[in-house]
Image 1: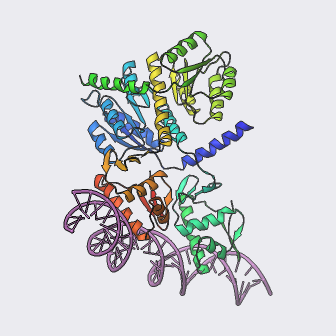
Image 2 (image 1 turned 120 degrees about the horizontal axis):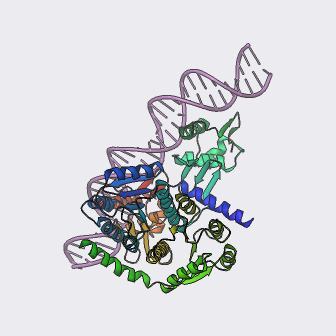
Image 3 (image 1 turned 180 degrees about the vertical axis):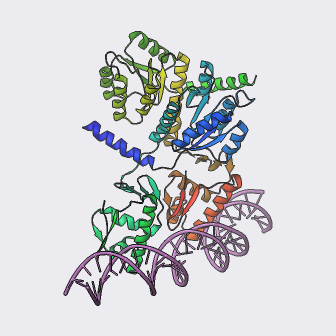
Length: 249
Length: 249
DNA sequence: GCAAACCACCGAAACATTGTGGCAAAAAGA
DNA sequence: TCTTTTTGCCACAATGTTTCGGTGGTTTGC
């Protein structure tokens, strides 16, 4: 009983995180073929990947903006320990940046060196793609779990719809729907009481507006269009002739 | 030559980390000889170790008090997947507890399963003792680095951004950004909750100001300009029409 | 079936908010 | 005191949002 309850909580927590933006992964690997291969696999998994072929190239980019995760090869071209040096430089920029070594060198000495240098994981290139992806996911999970887990009143979930009042963001089945301020409040007014019919006057009040009835109609049109742009079959907003609108839920 | 130099530095780094507090590590392993061996090694490294031979025995202890790290074998006596079950139960008790699988089973399927189950690392029993210890240390370092900003409220890291509340200094990817006091507090207000929209009134309050809305706009202009002077592609501060500003993070 | 009321859609005008450069007042240093 | 930095504000330009009338289609009541 208790266990089930806890798991439910964890699950809803996961949903929250999944709505977040894709992670930016930096991949530093000198072999173009291998680089493309890994970059591809990570992208297919929904990550945003920047790939670099050398230590210098990577550092230039890191000084502009740090990624959410760095995956480093150790030998970079002529520089036999370029990855180690890169790791050290990165740690100087950010103590908390997740770093994974991904290299052909499999000696215990190298592994221990890499981990002591501040890396979070050390993988050899014989790992399978699923294995690599699982390691990456595990590291991201560790990062997330440590981050402040606050939710509740600022979040409204109604089926596929999720409204975050703190972020002023709306998502449908995980996909972001870009609503303007007025549109956001109207969706909020509707979705707060699924099934209840709201007339135009009520909708106006919730959005802090005093306008013509036709204007509310226009807003509904745009809201529907924005949701349908993401999910063509969207049909949650029902028109109740002579009454107003209702969120089917 | 270069390699030797790099490794030397790593070594001195290790000394720093080893000074840390003793951690309570739970070791669940059914083979008494192996169990004693690992427990011994961990203790010699300054950790406090509780060793258990079965899933039930371990859970009884966990319900009384959780360790700082759990190292689990997968096969426990007759129970071929006892470690997996234990991991699941442990995760229900605490979503954030560090877990490492340490097992003879080396199939990719088991590794991926273990990691997906919520483990932080997966090691096979052929790893050397130094390797194991380095993995444990790396995981503890990750925990510490994440927990630090909560305990010591004087440092805030958000991707490339780092704010030092003690010195009122801000850095972007390691490069100093010269912010005035008001600007610093506004960046702080934004970056403290990445993704959250802050309206002008909230921003004023966080910077201890009571001014015109336009003035906030001006501050944002100057803040953006200062960051862009360092990283021309800077784009973290997003304006949300009619709502305020948000740190993308 | 028909008229009246209502709603969806389009597009352009009206409106609101934000970005920019500049300037002066206030505060901080020298 | 004088200089420099920081801050607040304004006008104008640029941008994004809201409003609303017209047209045509749909629902309702009789």
